[in-house]
Length: 47
Image (cartoon, rainbow, N blue to C red; front, side, top):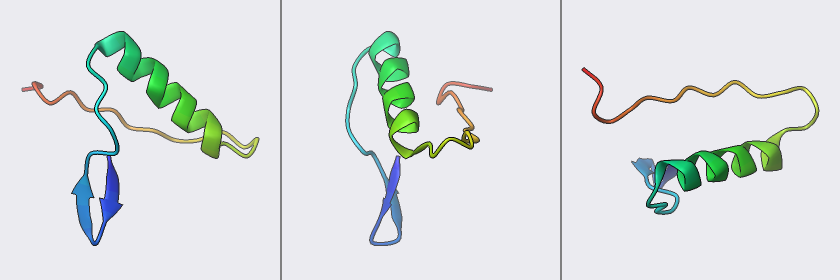
C-alpha cells in the first residue's frame, strides 16, 4: 500500500502469498538504512 494524493492505494498486485511476502521483504530492504524497520501486517480476512 502507498499514499497517493492523500489516499491509500495499492502499490502493485502480487497474486500469491509467497510472492507477496518476497516482495514485502524486497521493499523493506530497499528502504532499510541499517537501523531496521517496523512493519505491521494485517490480513484482509482477519476477524
